[in-house]
Image (tube, rainbow, N blue to C red; front, side, top):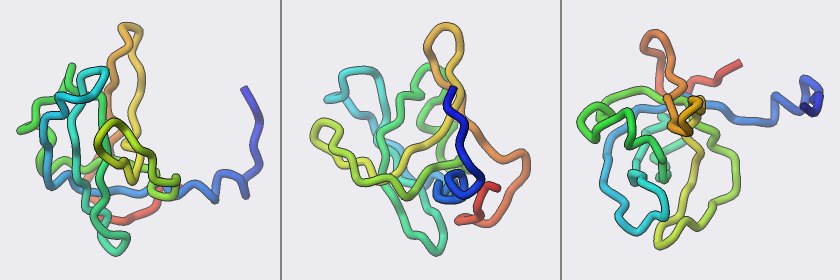
Length: 111
């Protein structure tokens, strides 16, 4: 593990957003959804998320998630990912989302 400084951590824009759209992503190499998240004043951002093992599209709509919104845009197959939705890997390789315990305003910064 590499130790980082507080100023390094402050550079990462971990923000809360609400999932407003979820679509299948059949072109993905691993099962995934194409997701749109509303980050409030930071806008609506698209992402590819490998979270199909534990979440249906209906489960995700309206759910608040934590995302990194200041990575460069990344091309994932035919789509561009504008944020990274965060989660925790389980022993079986599946992902469980990192979510706020209670509702917070979209765009709120994790700190």
